[in-house]
Image (cartoon, rainbow, N blue to C red; front, top):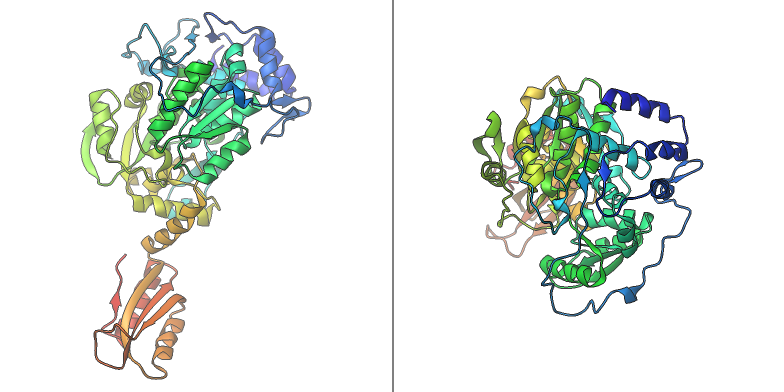
Length: 545
């Protein structure tokens, strides 16, 4: 079925009930066929019943049946210190269809291995038909998030549309790939269960959707994981086990449990199934924003979202520019393969040049960075990115913080670093060629921990020249501080804090050192205040940001 026919087909189905649509889907799906465990036609409707009801789709976890309880006795000695020495049990899948042209021959150079030990060992070909099939199957289980015109458009001189994937139930776009991955599991593996580790957005998506599909799910987290994340995974329906002091300890323990109990160990790898699920976001962006000129993606989480969605967008319109925003401690001018001019992160350059993913050992593992740290590519997404991406730009941490502030102020959206990194490319002024064009920015994640929120906003206000601090020395006489406050009131500033130091003053006796922290409207207002203060107190010292 070509894209035009499929698009018409989906429009007709909009007026039909979800059950009727999935009856049609039984004869529609020619793409995924398993070698050893072929799913019967009844299984497809059974999977749909987990997400659909007679009156329409069930969203936000409102499901009629209670998820099956997880029996803790199924775990064998999960507190032992021994680690896994063998391989984890896996299943295999082949992608079969009619001979059709691959997406821009993006994966023509990938070697096919004869044996497999992980999910990435599935057939590595990804086509537009795979993404379309994924969109059809997961439509009842994920939100079709809005791609809305932003009030930031006038400020940056272009039509900005924000794809708000942080509105997914778990606050992350990764739900798309996870749901399709879980729905593609064989029935026997669904009964046995899955196991996952790490404290990123991926295990939270697995915890929620596995519970909704009645699949037993276990999440192994290190003792250093944020209590809020542990609580969230438990509320989603997973059995959470704290083990080890590092992520590596919990990962090795999860692999051992998977081998002993027959669970499928899931990790965020760029298998064809996972990439196809993530690619459904690209289909929605193309449908929601007509005459689109460019899409800005964040680089993080093995770049699966970038690879899958870029494949869909380039197939529908090769003229759409795919731009990647990447966090970098320094800007490096270089020329990437395929003639891409970029200011990019050294790891990104090295990965594209070497043809395989390279991990940056020096990258910070602070919770602020979340899923943007670690490996920037999987092997499959690396091949796709080299063919489909038009430009890569580097942004600084300061740009990301200001981007988070802009989204909170103008869009009432509280996002994390991964969610804000796309807009940061526009905030930093790295894309002047997009002036006057229609640009979609992917806001892919909104799982910012509360203890970081206050620090990020306070720092962003300082970087945006809206909070400033200065110190000056006054004589310790009645009325001197009131004169300073009069100047601040006349300049219409808001005093956030004022401190007086009399004991540890290095100037002459009977003086007081006053330190003021004030809030201003913008950079121009800050400059006006500074001139007014220095005119009255020439020795005033301003604290640089």
